[in-house]
Image (cartoon, rainbow, N blue to C red; front, side, top):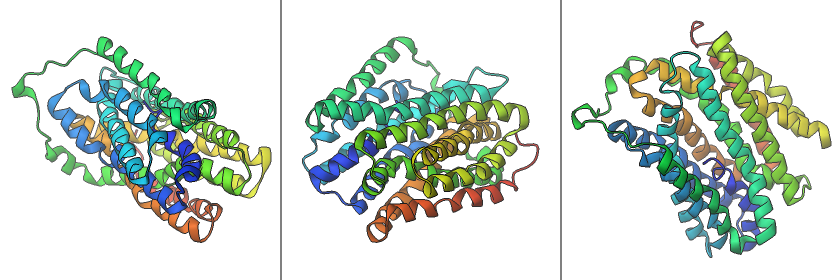
Length: 364
């Protein structure tokens, strides 16, 4: 599923040449992606908690694959926006229900279970840039639709593997806002921490290929491979973060993640060659280690509304960061440079480190 979530960043250098898209338009396109794919996730989480239909997650890979893979066929910028919106909406449909299923039957070590789920998605996200760059180099934008095949195959497999949930109508719950109101303070704190981390995460995902190819002289393939490196290390970080949270507590993992990524982010921007790529890889490893941690902590605060709080942490916070900062980054990059804009975002993990001290020490 997440193979398609990282496709837009790879398409953009080619679409910029074909349709004449500038940095501001690229930022707006990224804003459409995160609105439809992330900000809207709580809506699908509420619907999933209400109706319990497997179709929220089963049909999503094929729909995302078909619309995202058709980006190369868009003859105009408005149609490009529409395709991004429809494909990203399928991503939003998938994640809340799938994240609940991932840990629903786990009584202990839920951090490990969620870490496996998040890391599998992160791995798909990491493979996406390389997958799309190789395919686009081979077939070109005019035949980008071939990239939809994995998504369609996954949907066909899920139709046979995942049974339909048969929940009596009287047991289908409407959203109970009472438990959420009771824990709104720690939920808000967790949300803000995800938001601050996501400013860096989503900005890099959106702009890294464009930045490396336009401002640091990377080839199209090399820039895509750099994004794959960053995302792969993030997947490994998520896997280790879940294990560490089960052992040392989520609060400690968040603190070390926020502080530990800063020197490596600075190394990436200040150095060149292998040291810069090493800084990028280690920054991804450390920064993204909290991906499963925040979700499990939120689910434990409101276990009866797992789909809703998972969507808040996994999609809504990530999406709001993108909605605000991707367009801003594109706009300021047109006036200054992507290097200056992305480098300034290093301040957000520092703010997250300071905010994480307010988490209760017993939080796990």
